[in-house]
Length: 526
Image (cartoon, rainbow, N blue to C red; front, side, top):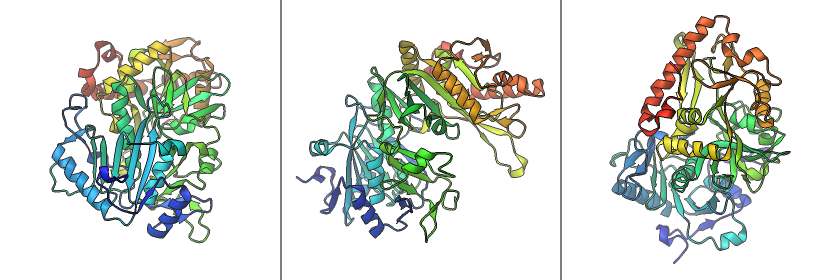
């Protein structure tokens, strides 16, 4: 039996675990839009889809996992028959290709918890992407890899049949936990594979008492103390993790076990919009030979990338091995976090720059996953919009958010971690009135958290949200720590704080049946 017979694949020309030069050559020869930049990066176009398609994600409702999954808008179900139709479409399509790529790798740097993943795809771009994003086995490990724990069938642009039961478009991203298979149709966006593996880990790890997390992680160079930073897009998670005083464990996906924290991935997937060497030198320099740049525009003569050009998409991204970051700690494992930091960009301008949370408040704000987006100026609308994503990674959850929150609270209590809510948003008024928090103040706050300074200073209770607010922090103006004092109209601050509090309460109603009364009482006090 050949390597892929058991998966239904019979293409004779299978390129198995190739090195980057081979993938470069095949992409340039056979994939439209491929090019090499002036710094040696492979440029790839992801076609019609330049981002994930969360509304097309489906999980098979089947007996072995039906009672575990948090069914609803995040995890919409399909039946076994529909999945098998999609799987057959993907396999039939892959069997028509002149060549296929197989990438074998691990998810999880801790050997005790890692899983073996096999990617089957038809594009060299996809193969190189997952070679970067999975943990690359050694030649000896590849020789003894054996059967994978999960298989990803990437059908790329080949569409789902929209008339198939449960399909709402020609794109389908379907996961079958019973069969341990993941099928992609109708999208060539490589991020679907990465987040598909993360979704798998988000199911498997909590089942054995391990907390899977959508966060970055760092370790102090001097003291070896670990820290994790949760945060939605635009809150500063990547920027604040790039700290010369700390080692990078990972930028996006981690697990917290009884032994400590490990990175799930072998690479990084960074936003490339407006990238510059001055602002983000490590990421800029990591985009060298072996890396991928998706959907960027470049000069046809010099092949220099214009990172400011968003004519293809604003979601330009770069994929590279984590070993391309000089500050990365490899293997990507660390101890138990001393500090858990939740980042929010509050465009209402009412949350303090930093607050210390109780375990119950940590669960409440972890489940809430709050940030605020600034509304567009169309028709004069300038009010910010509250955005909530449970556990700071709603699209990738499988269990009810309370499952992850309970694991977080248990680990915080057991290991004595301090939990902080850090606002990187507005002060002195909301968007359009106040000003964005200066990065140097936020960095000073993070430094004070890591040094232990903030854990020792006196606090005052926020009357609306109920958390403890430090009254002093080195490098930060004292008045800035109390947001009401920065507003010229305190009554306007009170009104805006009450508005945001109501948004929190309204959002949390959907999770109320899965949490304790103590967690419910940890929300805003109105």
